[in-house]
Amino acid sequence: MTKVKKNLLLQIYNICETIEIYDPDKAVLGASFAQSSSSSSSSTSLYHSVSGDKSMATSLHTSQLGSAFLGKRNGICVSTVPVTHLGFRRKTVECKESRIGKQPIEVPSNVVITLEGQDMKVKGPLGELALSYPREIAIDREESILKVKKAVETRRANQMHGLFRTLTSNMVVGVSKGFEKKLQLVGVGYRATVEGKELVLSLGFSHPVKMTIPDDLKVKVEDNTRITVSGYDKSNIGQFAASIRKWRPPEPYKGKGVKYADEIIRRKEGKAGKKK
Image (cartoon, rainbow, N blue to C red; front, side, top):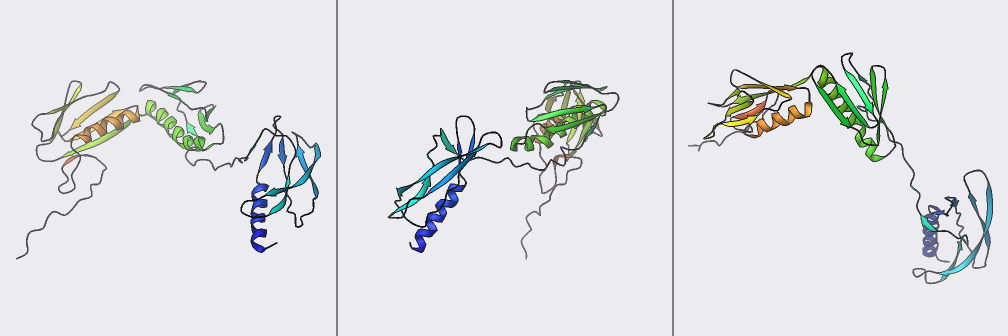
């Protein structure tokens, strides 16, 4: 037998070692494929275990199978056990817990939490919020501490773990202390005022921009150029602040526009004059 044929048979042997056979009773049969060095027939045994330590031997017979890429017939051990289908068994690999997801959440005394299955309601002095958790996430409550855990070890559970821990913490902090977002208007003639339930912006357009303030938010204007959006729902605060900034995003040359108070605008150098 040539060296090339031996290498091809060795590849077949390595591939067959990873194949597992499943029977109708969910019994896992581990097959051991032997490489035959001679063309004479031989026998080996196939062992399988069914949900325990019981084992039994089933004889295998060596059949002469033709291979298109080998050119000759070579002896390969083939199982005679009747099976429903062949497949590859995927091993579950446990991933490390999220550094954010495994942190506990402290619940203040003035916050009431109600758990109903995968739904949670948080009520505090500033308002009430609710959140539905996916089936991959479980909530454990121990007196004044909440823990967000993974119910299963899957890729989606790893993705959702840190996210829903952060959402839960934002709910608890929001109904007890609240959040705020500050914006600043930069530009000649740019100003903002609050008229009833509307925020009126003068941003250099031919008309003033009027925005309706949501019921769960409060908007305060200082010095006609500094806007403060506050409330107990962090996502609504960020969405409303982004919608204000969208009307006139800051430009990089003079920095004119509506920007967040802690935002740093990367400035560009304008066109230089002609050198004489």
